[in-house]
Length: 233
Image 1 (tube, helix red, strand yellow):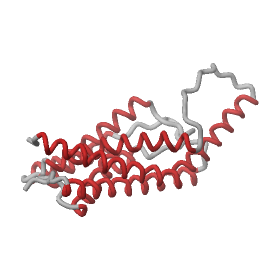
Image 2: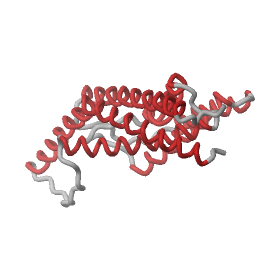
Image 3: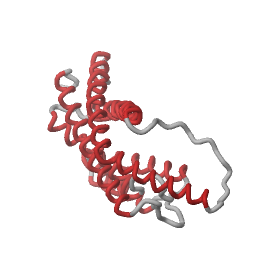
Image 4: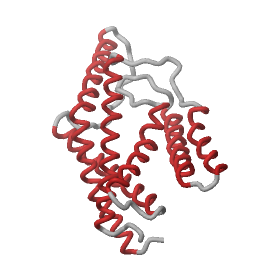
């Protein structure tokens, strides 16, 4: 069980690693991910305008507040990314500490790759990132499937890598496959307002941005952990 000084060092390392990794993710998103979102919003707004012109009646609902495009949107995106990155860094540090900590930035890359696999790749295989205007299944069903996939992937990878018996490793493999055997929730009619090319570009850009984010987060946690002596001897 970590002592108070180790816990303090872990928190400090996570704050710094989360700050820089979150800012990096924001920069990567601003380059291609956000422009794709803005293009998709144009198609969505055009469809809403067409419904209005053709006389389609909908009960008016007050739109939720969202930041204006430009500096304000970038600022709020950065705040959200940094907050999320700090939380992920804490998870990464706590999990790695169970195995003696992250001894170097090279080890951090492997832990970052595991985080990328758990929190992005595994869920995206069933529920790829979606642009505005894309038809989707019930939100609660998607959230439940996402949580199940993250949990099963995390435990499955842990058992495959660290389990000492073949039976436990086999159980880990079963956990990795189980979300896709159950199947992700999808709408009866699939499609979106944005062109397929734009959707594919968005998915690829999101995958690359998240991969770089997780690798950098893991490497930074390795550097910070070594400097702050979080690693167990």
